[in-house]
Length: 256
Image (cartoon, rainbow, N blue to C red; front, top):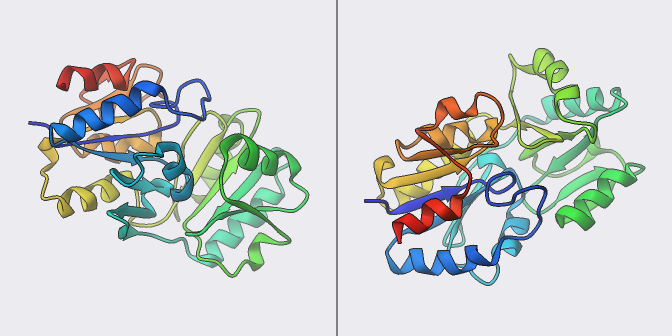
């Protein structure tokens, strides 16, 4: 019996760069709730942004935000993580040296982009609709670092290998979209975040169902035997899932 469904957003519920959920999602979630199935939105996105996406149902679901660095259930934080500031600053300085890399710094309240990076700021503020602020110098921010993310508008794969080779012994680095890769806080990922929420609800892993498409989803996919990788997932992600699908909504309908 399934009692909890957790889904990634970008590339999973949000397809082809969409920034709004399909109307069907807002029909399915209340139907799941009536059957006693709890929904968790699990994303590398910031918490405030995910809540806006799910309005007016935002108080009826739980959240694994910032790749598990900020996990919220019934308005309370149930799990969190942070990146050491010295390491974060080192990554920031290295990203500045790479001409195609734009850096996003996430804190619990908002995210930050350095002044002068107009393209990324416009993308984050006006396309993705984050709570974002310009900063003179990210290394001087007086804000907890939940996540550091690098954007390469020409494709994440153009820069991901370089940073993985340089930092993989010190911090986990995963692709989180076609143009993004993320540096994950220690002991924080979508799997640990989902486990915290499931524990709060007294739900076992085998009573959960998960959906994802990128390497920041693999711990969540591995959390339960009822896992689905999207058929458009990053190469190799399907190995961590029990099934594949082209539509989260289609699978959910089979439960109703």
